[in-house]
Image (tube, rainbow, N blue to C red):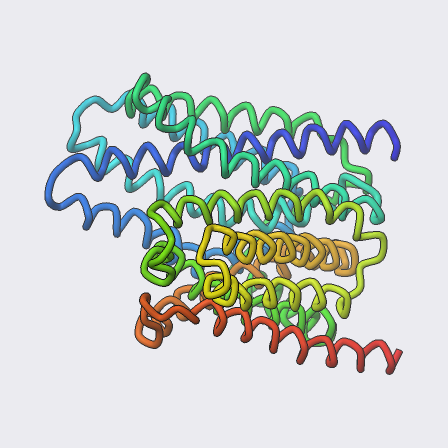
Length: 403
């Protein structure tokens, strides 16, 4: 790996880690503040959270078009700076009523900016390292992201207690600005594409149609996205049921939910580390095997419960998370390596839109279909993922035979 690539990776991973730190801290502080106001706080938090999913559905596709039309480095720099300035301005609002409105409005603005920056982040990867180093970069990103996800909630409690809502918002603004500065020092390996000076509604529509046509013609990537969407559908059931772990496995002492979350995060971290050792060649069929192993691990969790009736059952979610992390890293790496650079933004815009659509649908359906006291919920979800992996394994095998 060349020196410039190493510098790019260090700046990009650091920027993404700091940005994730800011995101988690922002959500924690605002949710804590809104929940402490009055009896209407649940309604405010509902609006706060629902706005993100709705905006994702509306703007992810547009964000993909923008990522393919303009310099991705400039998009990332701009969105971080605007996010930082927004949080800093918000930190100086002292009237509670206006601060509430400001938090909800700023969250909407940040969600819109995220819809533009997310496809650019994923697409920019191909520009800053050589093709064969993309998987390694994604592994580093996942390690940092998982570490931040585990550590920051603990730090957030301390920071909110010491700094209060205004201090945390000011710190948030600084983290976004610092994240943008790190992006400024990245030197793309590929020749930077020229910005399009003008873009019309017609251009956006035409670009989207071209993006969908490209995806439909690229059968392997198209089917990987379908597989990922279906997995998200069942992951919605898993995330929905996880807080009810104590009801599903009542013979285990209290605190099981927190223990599983810790085991899950540890598994995801190990998966990210192991991915860098197992991604020498990215093969869709091989990816489905990792996915199958994740489903198999989750499937066995209730079986472990009936055999041991102890916290050893956390091995199921831990190994599930490990193999799922490997699949996710290799899925994104495969798309980044194989999709043409000029279409990457739109493809990731489609991926994010599909993910946002399928998880709420899954949540609604499984809220009705599953009972939190049923001990074989994880078996149903794991078996479904295992079945999907088998179907798509055979499908990708057929594609490789045709080649």
